[in-house]
Length: 181
Image 1 (cartoon, rainbow, N blue to C red):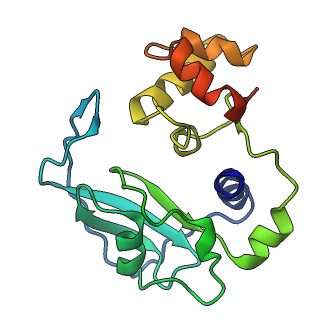
Image 2 (cartoon, rainbow, N blue to C red; image 1 turned 90 degrees about the horizontal axis):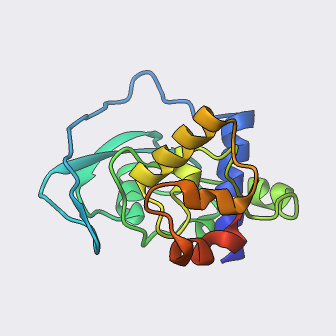
C-alpha cells in the first residue's frame, strides 16, 4: 500500500520537475465517453475511453481503449515498458477511466524519491488525478474537492473534507490516514 502512495507522489514530482511531453508526430484518437455511475461503480456502456500514457513506456501518447480496460492494456498500446521502468510501482490491474493519465516511473525516480514523501495526498495541493487515488473519490468528487478549496481558500483540517457533498463520516474514516493539509 505504501508503494502505491509513493508512486502517486512520484507522479506529482515528475510532473512538476520534468513533465510528460507528447511527441509531435504521434497519432491521437479522441472519442467521447458517457460514463454512468451508480452505487456499485462504473458501467461499461460499450464506448471508448481516452487515456494518456507517459513516462517509462516505449511510445508516450493518448490512446483510445474500450471502456472497462485496464492499465496493462494501455501500456501494451504504448509499446510496453522501457527497460528502466519500475513496473512493480504500477497497478496494472486497475480499471481505467476516461481522461486518465498513466505515468510509469523509472527505477531511478523510485530510488531517488523513496523516503522523501509521507505518501499522503495533500487536499490543498493535489491534482484531480491524485485525489482520485483515494478510495471512494472519483472524478466528480475530486472536482468538488478542488472547487471547494478554490472557493474557500483551502481546507483548514482534514475533517473539512466532510463538507464536500457525498463525503460523510464513513468515507472519511476510510481516507483519513491517507490525506493531509
